[in-house]
Amino acid sequence: MELAPPEHGGGLRAWARRFGRPLGEWVDLSTGINPRGWSVPELPSEVWQRLPEEDDGLAAAAAAYYGTEGAVPVPGVQAAIQLLPYLRPPCRVGVPAIGYAEHAYRWRLAGHQIIELPEDEAEAALGNLDVLVVIHPNNPTGRRWPADHLLAWHEILGARGGWLVVDESFIDPTPEASLVQAANRPGLIILRSLGKFFGLGGARVGFVFTEERLAAQVRRLIGPWSVGHPARWVARLALLDHAWQARARVELAAASERLAGSLGEQGLAPAGGTALFQWILTPDAATIQRHLAEEGILVRRFAYPASLRFGLPADEAGWARLEKALVSLNLW
Image 1 (cartoon, rainbow, N blue to C red):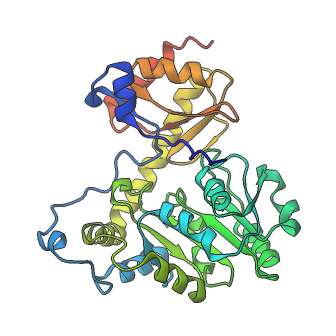
Image 2 (cartoon, rainbow, N blue to C red):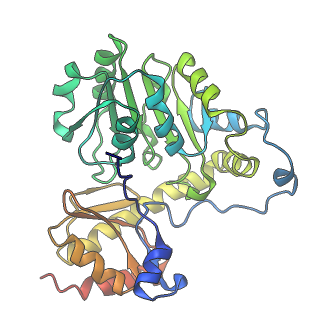
């Protein structure tokens, strides 16, 4: 039986067709991508004309931003999620029962035994696992763990050749919580993304941090020129713009707090979230998603548990439309 691929946020064109509303009239809150991302300058013509080169300064920019060397560029974290399951023979892999579904799908597709774990049961399951995948912070619940907890889990797994894979795609607003500087430990694999915090999802740029043996395997299998020259050029500049990063962290924290307040005022108090989204548990998820779509607002719905993820509006006009649509829900 063929596995059905997971559903994702986005897909705005299909929603626009379904509801008969032009693309430009939608407020897309479905992806969790920073809607006020790093502003891309005009690109020099040569970045379109020449193949990318490894000594273009991207490695140095990544080392300065992440505080450690050895970043392996990949065309988005998704590429790493698809590749990693093929670097081990079939084994027992623990994945979050609630979380980015591509992890479970890709490990299962590669022939591994998948054990879906509630967030509070991961530690107890370590003795029965060869690989544990942690989404940190979790998407969509926002759950985080202290670094010492995660490193202790890694020690248990690593002692018998196991892996701890930590997807940190949403951690950039709180970089102090990252494990990236410990990524040279055998069996610890950290995934980082420029898509969420930097708002550069379309560039398809991510990084894998791990011990050199595994890093060499990733580089060999991902192949040359895996990240295009324009994307590398943009990524280098974004990683070096520390002033923008500092402002963005403050602005995102305030916007996320505002979103949580707006939702709570209308009877949708968040059950979790990050600086880039808020997560709502509600049995009425499908009804609320449809009502908002009728108002030209797209949010991400999860079937299990019934819930919604709200990203951040890009401007005051978007905030006004969201808040008006929430009031019209009449949940009280």
